[in-house]
Amino acid sequence: MFSASDNLRGIVLMVLAMAGFALGDVGIKLLSGAVPPGQIMGTVGLAGTLVFGLWARARGRPLFPAAIRHRAVALRFVAEMVAGVGMILALTLNPLSLVTAILQAAPLVVTMGAAKVFGEAVGLRRWSAILVGILGVLIILRPGFAGFSLDALWIIVAMLGLAARDLATRAAPASLDTLQLSTVGFFALVPAGLALSLFGPSPVWPTPGDWGTLAFTLLATIGGYYAITAAMRVGEIGAVTPLRYSRLIFGMILGMVIFGERPDLLSYVGAALILGAGLYAAWREQQIARRAARAAT
Image (cartoon, rainbow, N blue to C red; front, side, top):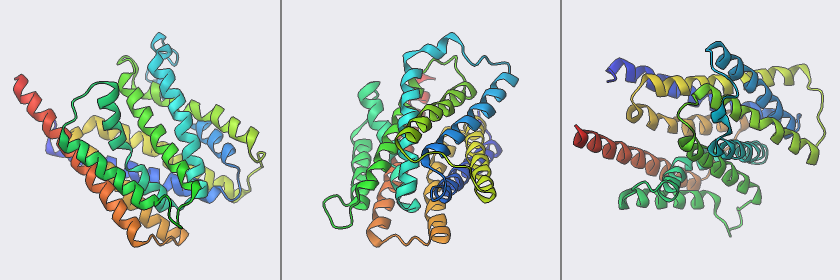
């Protein structure tokens, strides 16, 4: 049973995690003008692998248990690679506010995937929320209209990769803890980064300023992973999960302040639809879970 103070700690940690991820996105976007995308991805992946790998070993967890060979873990590895490539190219080629807004539809895709893959019951209300969220994405992208850019499709790739990763995580063996899965997840970025480097610009030696930005990006991203892990452990899921959408606020503010982005009215409308649909779906899911828990007692 979680207390009010536990939930408050979880909420604060979740907000800090989303701020960390948004700041990490800023760092990647700042670096993208000077450092090739593959090099950024490979460096982030290697650093994250070392941090979470050492952390897991410090907790006495083996890095390569038998469960790591489970098919769901392999699928998660591939999904991390797809999400990583999509994310790095999305941030390089698109406004930060656009990337952040569309990524918020990932939980809705997870709900849809859970119904199809795991046979989870998804009622009419949540299906309606999913459709509203998809409508929000289409309003932001506006395919077929003059403002549409093919570069924005990389955001969809990233979103689908993140959703596939979350679905694979649900199917992963329960014996694997967060640190082990995080180590594998970050390691997936290393070969993906190498592949991007083979087909893209050659690696460069960063300037002192770029090294500083890279260090900032690593701290923000890894700190975000730590905070979100802690948040899900200390607080009730129903209280903590909705704060994931604070990343939308951080992303839009940082995009406007740092990169001078000015989203148009339709982008705000689409983002509002995604946000509202996601929050409603999360609330509805928790409501159903509470009813099931009461019925079981």
